[in-house]
Each structure stands twice: as structure tokens, then as C-alpha cells.
Length: 481
Ligand SMILES: Cc1cc2nc3c(=O)[nH]c(=O)nc-3n(C[C@H](O)[C@H](O)[C@H](O)COP(=O)(O)OP(=O)(O)OC[C@H]3O[C@@H](n4cnc5c(N)ncnc54)[C@H](O)[C@@H]3O)c2cc1C
View 1 (cartoon, rainbow, N blue to C red):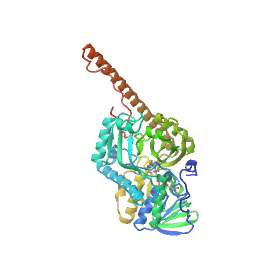
View 2: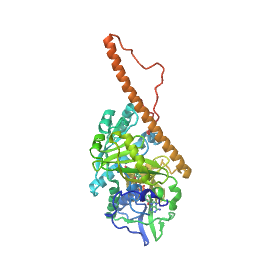
View 3: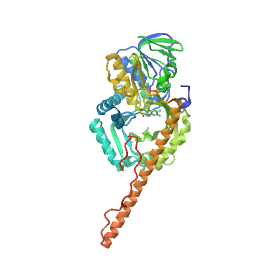
View 4: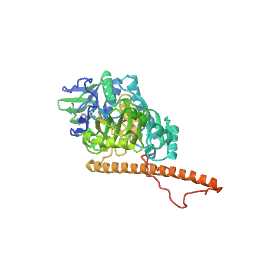
């Protein structure tokens, strides 16, 4: 992928002054495991493999956390980018349970690395709330039951009042609260991972693009502009950027650029609009935000299927904040940045062995923290211990993402989903207002009947009138009205 502005344009998003000097691979090298890419995926594989005693080299074309991994919001949740119901439909309940358990293990590994290893400035905060933009109480109860009973995940159902007591907007209805989810400083985490990997013995070479790979022999060969490397295993953790060394693999991912911003300090007015301290995301996957540094909002929302300058999205994010929190009034945006996620056609990550000794850890989409941790652990343990659990991901094959046509289609589908979700939200709010008007009318009528000594009619719904159904939500299930 050519140099684009998406990451260069990140405005003052952290300082590089405290990072170790970069070193480029300029001599030939022989190792057990070569990892292509120093994002979350590559670094976790490197750390886990080095801890298990392998000699590891990481080759990074730019620098550590150059793209998505250094520009994420740091929310660590269980699960994948695919609704559980879809996973069950595809691979059955038992395998879905195992995959889900792995996703919790992944989150646990991130927590352990971030906190037990005392990554400097990692700033954890607890809890995440997934809010619904439509009024789906019954649906919520079914989901809570499934998560807690079938998937042993600690969750709480929040009724509308509870959600709105902590997040003061009429845009959200019910919520699913994950008390064990948490937040970290995403950029500090990726550099913390690199430091731990180095400490475990892995060597990380930046400004070292891999230009070709020969994976046919027992000892695989990698060529970079100024060196050659031989390894028994190669792990491809290059996300959508992999390019020439295995173009067909890159083409199984649809690149989606996601943009985020942090506001200027908002003072007291932020605590009047939101007291919830964890992260908030809506079930349609449109907005994702949380409070940082006490009185700023960090907010991710817009997406494109092409590279654009992040600054362009300061206005749209400002407007999005205004739409959700009119109470806040005008907000100033202090920084905007973006990163590319790789989306697979089926929505699940690519974790596994392509041929003997050639591994892939890619396609983590918007939920890359727990899932890259799983990938790192499974791949390292398979290479060094023969742990075969990565095969749970085998049903999710490498599917061509459709090239340029796929991007255009992806954009169309993304826009349609967002518009449908907004329409469903508007309908839900309309019905909520209509319901409260109806309640006022009924109270007045009851009072008039009481005074006149007459009985109220049994039902006020005209017979035979169909009730409007909101569109299917992100979980692929019809919302229950
Ligand atoms: C705005 C935003 C917010 C997000 N928020 C969250 C969040 O809150 N929680 C969460 O779980 N996830 C979040 N994500 C998703 C998460 O960031 C990604 O899923 C994750 O970072 C993907 O990691 P990766 O290592 O696969 O890819 P990348 O970070 O893209 O790393 C791949 C690396 O490989 C290198 N590379 C590629 N090809 C070559 C080659 N040929 N030679 C050498 N090097 C190569 C690249 O230079 C790059 O550095 C967010 C993403 C974005 C953009």
C-alpha cells in the first residue's frame, strides 16, 4: 500500500521522543520465526514466541504501531466483530463457545500484559457499555441470557432509565454492560508490547519492508531492500499493507479507514452530559467513545473505504457529538487521526497456517486488541508446543474481498447500514415520544372518566392496524418492539 496521509496526518497524537531509536535490518540473519509487521498482531506473536524460547525477528516496513495499532481507542472487549448468533449458525454452539472462551482469554492476556507488566502510563479504566439505538427490551433479555448462561460472560442489562442516567441523550435506549471489559491507552500498549518482546529476546527491525518471500522450502527466505533472512516459520501480520510479498492474501481484506478525535477539555459540562467512565459503543457499530483525561471526549465514528486526510473528519465528528449530546453545546476538536482496519468477508480474523511454516495473523477489523492477543498466543503455542486450537478458525477461510469493486460495494453497504441504523433510531425515538404523549392522554382520559364516573375503553389500538417493525440490527436479529 502506498504512503497515504491517514497516519502521517495524525495530529500530535502522542510523542515519539521517549521511544527507543529505530534499527533497520542491514545484515543477513537466521532465526526460528520471522514476523512481518510490528502492529498489535506481529508484536504479540513475537512476544509470546520469544517467551517460549524461540529466536524471533520482527520486520516492520515503517515503524512500530505505524497504522491502526498505534491509533486505536484501547477498548478491550470479549467477542469478535461478528454477532454470536451468526457464529452459532455457521459453526454450531460448541465451537462458538470455544471461540468465545478464546476471545475472553485474549482480553485477559491484554489485561495481564498491560497491568501486571506495569506498562508505563497505560491508564486503565473499567467497564464498557453497548447501547441500543432502538427500543429492544425483550431482545436484550434474550441476549443477556445467552451471554451469561451459554457463554459464561459477566454482563448486566441496563434499562433505558439507567442508561440515560449515566449518558444523557435520548438517542440511546437499553444497554448491555460488560463489567470485565476495560480501556487502556492504545498507543502506550503497542509500544509496551514492543518493549516486552525485546526484553524477551525478540529483535525488531523498523524501516525494513519485506519485498519478497519464498515459503517453499523447510527454511523459508525473506528479502528486504538491504538484507536476507532465513526462518523455519514466517508469520504474516501485515494487515492490509502486506502488498507484494503475498498480494493475493492482502486481497482477502477490505481496507476500511476509521477516524477518531479527541475534544479540547470540556470542563464541568461533560460531567453533566455523561458520568459513565467506561467506553460506550452502539450496537450498530457507528459511534464509539469514552471520557479521557477527566474532561475530554475521545470519539471514533466516520469510516471510508479509501484513504482520506483525517482533518476532514473533525467537522463530522463534531456534528456527531452534537447529535448525540445536544446538551454539551459546541465542542472544540483538539486532535484527529485515522487508521486502516482490514475487514474479512466473513467478519472473523484470519488466524492459522497457510502451508507448513507459513502463518497468517490478520483481518482483525475494529476489534483488534483481544483478537490479536489470541492470534499471538495460538500461533506461538502451535509452533512451539503443538497446540492446535488455531484450527477453530479454519471454517473462516480466506475469501477474496472483491478488489476495487469490493471497496465500492463495501462503501455502499456501509453507508446503507448507517442510514438504516439512523432511521431505526429515529423511528424508536418517534415511538417513544408517541408513547409518552399517549400516556399523558390516557392519564387525562382516566381523570375525566373518574370525574364523570364512566369506564375507560379496554384498548385504544385500532383493530387490524399493523405495528411498524424496526429493521434488523447488527446482531442480525429482528428487534422486538
Ligand atoms: C480509529 C480506530 C480505533 C480502533 N479502536 C479499537 C478499540 O478500541 N479496540 C480494539 O480492540 N480495536 C480497535 N481498533 C482496531 C485495531 O486497531 C486493529 O484491529 C489492530 O490494530 C490491527 O492490528 P494489526 O497488527 O493486524 O495491523 P496494523 O496495525 O495495520 O499492523 C500491520 C503492520 O504490518 C506492517 N507491514 C505490512 N506489510 C509489511 C511488509 N511487506 N513488510 C514489513 N512490514 C509490513 C505495516 O507497516 C504495519 O505496521 C481500532 C482501529 C482504528 C483505526
